Image (cartoon, rainbow, N blue to C red):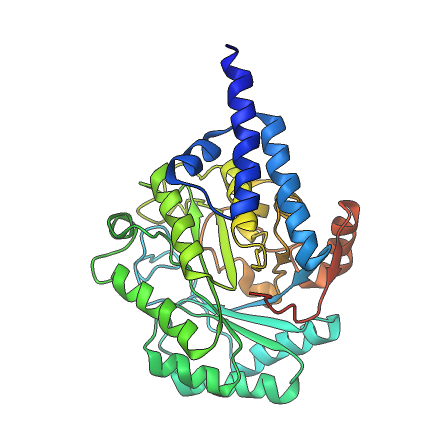
Length: 355
């Protein structure tokens, strides 16, 4: 028997089964994620594109990203803005600076704004709530997304009542032991999961996700992530390759696999056909065509940067992050051309999840 042909044939059957059933057995996932055969991978990406087109057409939704603080109370081992990084150049945007970013984005056509920052207690629950209310009063047709880490349920409820629509909180890993390898002991896996559950109960459109190739990650960890996301049913999933930051405990670790990230994007699209799936900045940072290849693997969201140019290079979660050029919101016409070149249409509407 020609074992190469058998593996290829088995690969096609796995892709077909995943599209049909929207899940696989643990062993099925293991076999699929190990496949490197180009025809099978192209079959996987083609099926992911077809499923994405069924629900979202060829629109690529844009979100205006505003990185409003790089202070953080946490010491996650992988993160360049961790509290213990004495080399980080810290900044906080004033309320008027944040709103200026929103106004510029609105003029450019954006209708979703993502307020992202480290867990910075300077922005009290009430202070952030006032910023949310100001944005919504000025632009009621816009969605406000928060990416601000772990807080108690009352804070999440308050921001939701102020008008926040979505919340992004990567679970990072669905394995408690692996979580402990990535975070200091005061950060608890159970609390991260409780936060995600509470956000969904409140009524947010919730985003979860993980890094691909983070230190200590195994293939079985990735499968646990897939099964957790299938069970949790988030509205959005953010994944990207792990990229080390030189001033962290993981500064000498290898980057995650670009190809595995593309495979996982396609798998997630087939598992959760209606999910919002970004082609992330990390993907664009590790490969010059990363954003396009992410879209061609089933993603349907990109997040250009609206932050003031003077602070973009300071929000370094990892090294070699792109922070000027096509990922900038000000270069939206060039980004539109890049999407047009691969047959997709950049759009700036709210783009709510169909989940």
